[in-house]
Amino acid sequence: MEIQKPGMKVGAAAVIVLLAGAGAGFAGQPSLVIDGQTMITKAKAPAYTPKLTSVQSGWVFRSKETQALQLDDFDNPGFVFVDKGRDLFNKVEGSAGKSCASCHELKDFIGLRTRLPRVNKDGHLETMEDLVNKSRTKYMGAKPWKYSGSKMTAVTALISLQSRGMPMNVAVDGPAKPFWEKGKKLYYTRVGQLDLACANCHEDNYGKMIRADHLSQGQINGFPTYRLKNAKLNSVHARFKGCMKNVRAKPYKQGSPEFKALELYVASRGQGLSVESPSVRN
Amino acid sequence: MTITRRYALALGGGALALTGLSGLPAFASVADDAIMKITGGAKVVEGGVDLTAPEIAENGNTVPVAVSAPGASVITILAPSNPSPAVATFNFGPLSGASEASTRMRLAKTQKVIAVAKMADGSFHTASAMVKVTIGGCGG
Amino acid sequence: MAKGVKPRVKVPKTASAGDVITIKTLISHKMESGQRKDKKTGKIKPREIIHRFTCDFNGQNVIDVKLEPAISSNPYFQFKAKVPTSGEFKFTWYDDDGSIYSTSKKIAVG
Image (cartoon, rainbow over all chains, first blue to last red; front, top):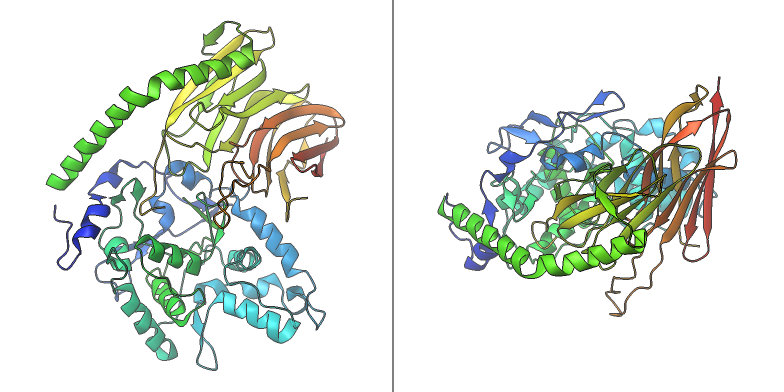
């Protein structure tokens, strides 16, 4: 078993210990069915990820106890934040005297999560957080929310929930192409003291143990996700930041062009997986 | 497979050393003291209580735990290797449908979690479960 | 009052007289254990938890829980209740800072 890659720094090999095949002992829940709806947790990998035979939701890699928390919307602690999101959605704020609900019905958002991030008319790549803050500043006359703050994640969880069960389907061609290429480049670029790229863990070694943790494919179909670790909803960019800090790299800013491009690329690696937001992870 | 085997051996050895050196004596007294506080020194019988917790907790911050003891009026959960051993005490009232409850707890490290049930007749019953608390992948 | 505390409870809407039903409750709360250090100041953050949770039905107690700092953030409980007649469940959480959060749910027996 050769885990040291050419060009990998010695320090990285010493710190990151991967145990081959250790994941085989996990006995998880048979499938992810929520309220009678079966989530697609494994799908055929897209043509542009030749190293993957299938794409798999992060849910697959969790222990049966963590998996169980997502089977019931009451057991899922993420839903107390969805409730808060609902209150925020109806709350009038800003100079225009409007709330989100003044212009939107929740059902308008069915399917939206599957298509984000996307390129807008002005040629900018937009995440759901961008859309929320654009509405707040442009139409409500309210202050933008912090990119991964608790109000933002509560509302993005509520909006994403409207697409739960629907397969991820982001555009990667046309105007999205240059952003996707940029994200792909970031995905394969080694960074930080540990000199690791996203791909080193989440493509080359998913399914193996990294110390006591079962490495997933790093899919984002369940975001925002409730993590047992910090007991709150976590945005995609906050997770990217955490990962970069873990490999001891200086993270890009949340909402930065780099993280948005990476989000698009990572989302495209999970095409076909059901939106699970708000999912539960460790 | 050399790296894997060596790592596995090292891990096993480390776990043994920990158990042998630091774990047991301190654990026993803290647990005994905590149980004594509940029972006031009365005899405690093994069994008659079900304690369900994962063998391996993915994160010590949120560990699901369930207790059940038919006929109990009070059930206390203890985690003796936490900074303070008590976790929760369930008092079952007249309209309780069964002497059972589930919650989610914090475990500071790998340890034997204990449930102590006080039965309606005043006797005490206990059960325990070993829960391994793991550390995340990269510093997480 | 701790910021943004929000309770959730799950109770069946109907039951038959004498039924035993399952109740689930969750409340958003940090459950500051009194063990953590403030990263900025280096000082221990003072304990601030919900220390007691009760569920009553038409004024009679179902369960009365004493919570310690070892209960996870966003405390969750699942337990069983006997339902003799139609009525109302009252759920109450007691915060260290003196705040009391409560909510109620009706159930119809028929």
